Image (cartoon, rainbow, N blue to C red; front, side, top):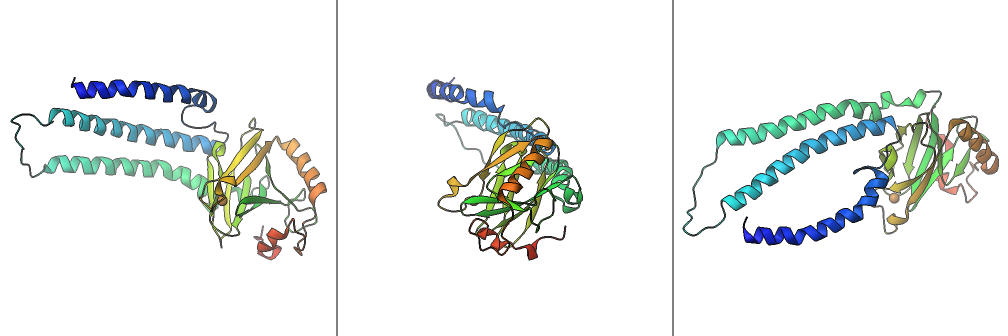
Length: 280
Ligand SMILES: [Cu+2]
C-alpha cells in the first residue's frame, strides 16, 4: 500500500472508533438508523427506506470504490503519459439507463404506499371510528382543538388543549392550519411529517398500534423563525378506554370553547371559526 494512504488510514482509526463508541447507546436505544415504528404506515415507509438505502448504498460503495481504485491506479508517475479519449458510447448508455431504471423502480415501489397514506380518497375521514382533531400552528406553539365526547365540532363540549392526546388502534385524522408561516408536524415514531401551510386546511392521518401507549415528542420540522427550536409539542397515546375517559375529563375541565372568541385561551382560534369547519 502507498505510504500516504497507510498514514491517513491509521490517523482515521481513533476518531472513527470514538464516534462508533459514542453512537453505540443511541443505536441500542433507538435501533439502527431509525427510531421505533409504532404504526403500520411507519413499517411500510421503513421497508421502502431500507430498499432505497440498500440500492443507493451499493451504488455509493461501487462508485467510491472505483474512484479510489482509479485514483491509485492512475496516479501521477514518473514518465506517465496522458491518454486522450473521446468517451465511450456504450459505457455512457449503461450509466444512464441503469440509474434511470432504478429510479423508475423506486417510483413504482413507493406509489402504492403514497396512495394509501396521502390520497384523500383513501383517508379514513368518513370512518365512524376515526378521531378528528384540529391542529393550529403558530410561531412557536401547537394548539389542539377537540370535538369532545359527542365527536362533533362546534358544540358545547368542544375544548382546546396544549397536548395531542389520541387513542391507539383507531385512525386519527388531523385537520391542520397555520396562523403565520409554514410549520411541519413531525412525530418520528409514527413516520408522520406533514407541513402546515398558511391559507390551507390540510388533512392527514395516522393510526398508532395498540401497545404504543406512552408520551412522544412532536417536533416542528420546518425552520419557521428565530425560536423554531422551541416549537416542541407533546403527544400522548392512550389505550382506547383510557382515552375515552381522558377525553371526557378534559372536556369537563376545559369546555366549552368560547366560539365568540373573546376568551384569551381560545382567542387564537379566531383564525379558524366554526363557519370554516369542514362539512363532516
Ligand atoms: Cu414551527
